[in-house]
Image (cartoon, rainbow over all chains, first blue to last red; front, side, top):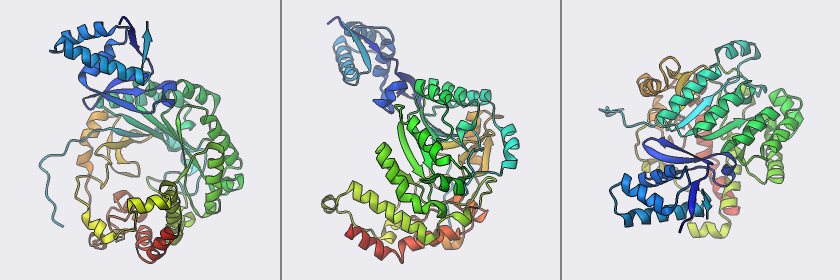
Length: 94
Length: 368
Ligand code: SF4
């Protein structure tokens, strides 16, 4: 429950025609050669992960930033973190 | 022909950039559309944008939302400041492709590429022997250097794509090039389809060395069938119902779509030339704005106002095969020297492809 997550540095977050995208760079292009589009909440979570954070900390930040209930925020955070882990996009600290 | 005037320009996004860092090249390929004579080198070099000018433009392109950058030339690695320009671009975050002849892969370039690997590298090969490189590109050890360069580049995590341009001088090595690349790198080779005449001051003897329309169609068919065989083995072909189509019906079913040059040029893609002009298509410089003087965004926004296309040859307007034909304003300019002419070479290719040889092609496909 107290696992901390941190975004790996092999992605550059930028805007392309009003969309937030992550561009894969460096040695990471061998694993993923392209880019990913983020919706506003995913984009906010990704930026928050520049420093290590737990799912609870991210949920709190989400409820402060967007008008969402804690339940909805937590489920968004959980889904996005799962996707990031599946694709080795975050470092995880116990 | 009656055309509806648009009240407003549809939204255009500058997503795909081609950056032509230099027009100079260390090879002298007979079929290069852009190659000037050696005597033009010092003039070309003097007119090239500085690395600081490229960096300013790249920042503006980044702010404007450019996503994909193709770095090309000439031979881009010929620029002494290539690594500096490249790295500053990479660190901003673009999807970057580099086109190179792979004969100038120095340790400095590799050191930069290891830190900042391009997403894709397109390596162009012009033959399978030094003899062919000497005859076609004026380089005695060109093949050895290109293969050595390709080997070095293939140690990067980048996706590597091999390309070749087939003309009379290297036609006999088409298969050898594919075999070598398959054996060494386990990769396919993409073949250019048609070689057009020189543009923008290019002065190589292209008309003399390119394939005849018949040879060109034979190559096209040969390559297409190979690809079909790879992608669709006979048992799958029946399942998906792959069969020759009726060209006329296909053309009639194509819907009108809005473009400025007949393609995505100037709609979501553009070229910045070695001397800072913004073009909708790298081949066509009669419509251009000045990206250095006016800044990238203004140059991009104003570019459509420069496009004035005349009526084209009436034979083309009435032609039932126009959708299959490679003709476009840039091809007309390359082949006829103007924007309205009917390019005889391209016209013949279309006709050979769709008429006399068509019966044979269908049989070839059934046989294969
Ligand atoms: S060049 Fe020839 S084949 Fe192409 S559109 Fe014109 S008439 Fe038709």
